[in-house]
Length: 258
Image (cartoon, rainbow, N blue to C red):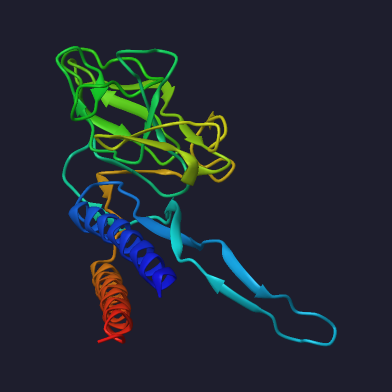
C-alpha cells in the first residue's frame, strides 16, 4: 500500500506539469508563429517479484509510477491570416527568419513570427526592435514595399521610380527544429539538439516561400487542448483517489487490533 501512495503521488506531479503545458498552449493561442508543446511521460522502475521463464510464461512486476520525460514542440504550420501591412510576412514551408541579437552577434535568434515593422533607420525589425538579418535598410522615402515569394525586395523611391534592391530575405532550416531553445518574445536559438542552421533563398530545399501581407497564427487547436485538459484533470483526480484509498486501507490495517 505504501508503494501505491508514492506511485499515485508521481502521477499527480506528472499531471501538474501536463496541465502547465496545456495552460501555456492556451495562453498562446493568439501568438503569431507559436508552436504548441506536448508533455510526454515514462514509467518508473519496476520491482520484480518473479521473473518469467520457459515454464512460467508470465512474471510479476509492480511499477513505481511515472515521470515527465520531455516536452516536445509540435512544429506543424499554423493558419495564414491576411493583413494589410506590407511588412507582415509568413513562411509557407519549414523555414525560420533570422533575427540579429543586439547582445551577442554570435548567437542569432530565429522566429516564425513575421510581424515586422520599419524603424527610424529603415531597418525591418520585430516588436522589440531586433533587426531582420541579411538585408540592408530601406532609404528615406521608400514606399510601396514589395516582397515576393522568393524573398526578393523592391520598393518605390522618393522620385516614384521602382527600385529592385537585388537582395533576398533568407530563410533557415534545422535538422531537428523541435530541439530549438525557446527564449521568449517569439524568439528561438539553436542548440546541440536542433543542429546548426542552414540558410538560403526561399522556395529552395523545403525552406518554403514568403507570403507578404500574411501572418502565421499559432498551431494550437483550442478544442484539442480542452480535451487534453479534461483528460489531465481526470488523471489527476484518479491519482488523488488512489492516495485516499491507500490511506483508508492503511487506516483499516492500523485499526485491526482494536
